[in-house]
Image (cartoon, rainbow, N blue to C red; front, side, top):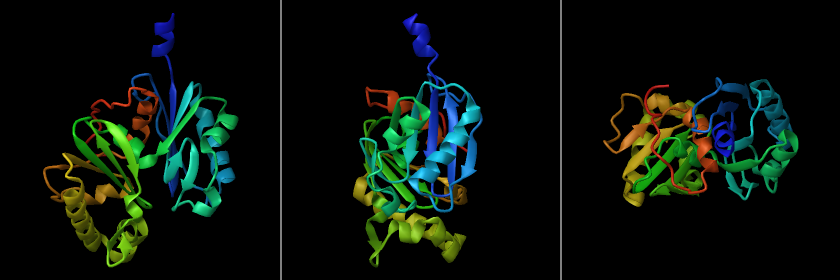
Length: 250
């Protein structure tokens, strides 16, 4: 009876982004049970508006037993400290886990979105680094599968400008694809020397613009859906992530 219950657990995976809110149902092994659904992030993304949009987004997906959330910022024990691309002043101190639990009536676990994406693709060996390129720049580092969320996107990098200043979606539109790709290559070189990773995984909506580009044998582009599929690992209390076959084209 207990075994049947465990194998029938359905996880609702949510990915909160600066431009889009995404969700998908996963089975007990992290396999999709639904199509990915998406709506634009509210133009003024207050916590109340984002939470309301999420409730409407997930309603058609049906039954679920627990919820995993990837959030674009710094989150400690479900409470938001920094949310640069949603407006930190709007989100600071919001207990996202508690507020979602009120609305969805299910257990909630929340982690930085880049860290969740990494959980969908890492192999769990040595130092692995994840960078997401979308509205902003997200990062996470793993040691033998154990995650340490980072905010390298806002770390000073080039002439007092941070990675996000030069690699965000706004920076891409301003600089153009060619110059932006060169900046990404330079960032990879800089971060490689700092972290000495075994593997770097680059995801996020703009990672598709790097296809065909040589960034090194230790760099892999990963599918953006990993930001949802990695959500199953938030419920693995062993904290060690297993390999997942999520690489390749979107």
